[in-house]
Length: 203
Image (tube, rainbow, N blue to C red; front, top):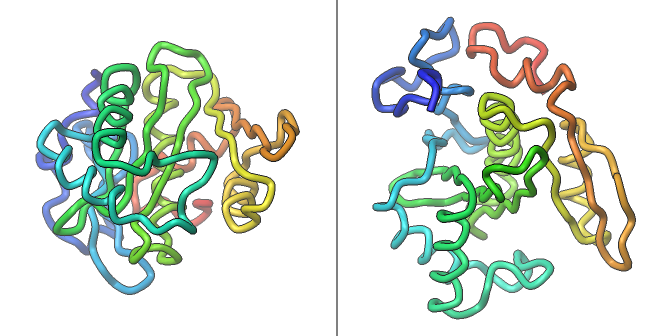
């Protein structure tokens, strides 16, 4: 783990970080985020103590937020799925009082790992998903990956629009899904890692 992946608790202890120019201890992207409703959140690496809250989040997700068989529908299946993501990959969570968003990236040793992303049903349409995608890009570049990929249902136009706006391109058209990829040589990988004070041309 690089110095930039240090625990976010060591830096940025105030919410108004718009003038922050960063420090050598900062993670790849500033963990402080305020959603479109003015709610402050932390986006940081997953910890073992997040497991119960994350399982609860997935157990509460409505059927409209499920896609391509994910997340699993029963608590034991959710627990097994999350444990595999923790063992095989790396994970980020968006935290209010509880976990309200999650990204799982696997396998951790792949040059172009695939990620899945979900936001709690009651916290959607508030910019959290887009912010999580920016964190995926920043962390993936910092960890030395060459690209990040995902699969999305062709009918999920809202998600496809978010990914295209960030810079993902369609690599393959499957029967009902699209496989999209973002090269981490793309300038966006550098832009999303800028401290808040230098984000005038952020995504």
